[in-house]
Each structure stands twice: as structure tokens, then as C-alpha cells.
Length: 91
Image (cartoon, rainbow, N blue to C red; front, side, top):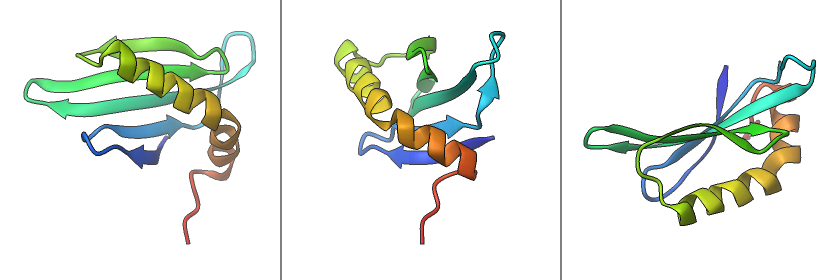
């Protein structure tokens, strides 16, 4: 399951996954940044807790990728909490 996190003015949508267990039995979350283009999507997916990029397609600039990494790093504790709750609860 993927949950909405935010949307940027350029159309980039950010979603995050349920908590999964990796091969080391560690809790992981994927955070996906995706923006529509004329030919499909620009996509980059980070994995927590490693902060590694697990998939990258399209034309995000290095500056955008660096910004996304900062967002993921700062939001990590909240993303884990929200993933356990089944998404962000908005009144």
C-alpha cells in the first residue's frame, strides 16, 4: 500500500509505502517521488532506513535529488509513524 505525503508545484507527487521487512528482517519504507512528463514519468524511489536510491528513471536534476534526500532524511521518523498508522490522518 502507498500513502500520499505531499505534492510539489512542478507536479511531483510524493508517496510512501507500508512498512515491510527486508532480507535482514529490518523494517523498511519506500518513498517515491514522481512527476508526469510528456513521455511518462520522472521517478526516484528512496529506501529507509538506508536512504539508498532503489530506482531512478527520467530527468530529475542532481539538485532536485539532493533536495528530495533532505526531505526523506528529515521526514523519516514521521514516515515510520504514519506508515504504522496506515497513512497521514488529516482532520
